[in-house]
Length: 154
Image 1 (cartoon, one colour):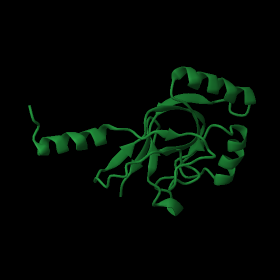
Image 2 (cartoon, rainbow, N blue to C red; image 1 turned 60 degrees about the horizontal axis):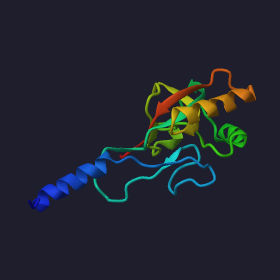
Image 3 (cartoon, rainbow, N blue to C red; image 1 turned 120 degrees about the vertical axis):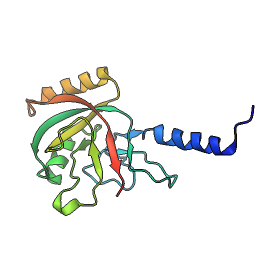
Image 4 (tube, rainbow, N blue to C red; image 1 turned 60 degrees about the vertical axis):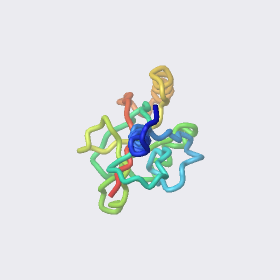
């Protein structure tokens, strides 16, 4: 049975929308186009119009929450030194000096900011990394969160 071309194209487009971007968790190898405060991930290069594109699900350790837009890059850089293999990130979308910043994260309260660290794809990886974070003694309220990074298109 032959599938008409229009149906094949629709199915291909639906498949493209269903895909999720692979996380690039190594802070030394970010994807081009991402800012230092963002967890980078592969994004579509197909020029298909969409409202948003999501990364694959991942786990993060939320080190602390704070008032929106108050995280500073210098603080993120200092924390990054503690975890050189796991990207430290913080949402700065819709902040006064970063209005073009369109990366946000799921499973967090958008009324607050946070500093997070990539913890892995599996619950086991995440638990091991959370234990590493707690061993530092610097982040007493650290907790795990399963989330996705989301690229919002203007």
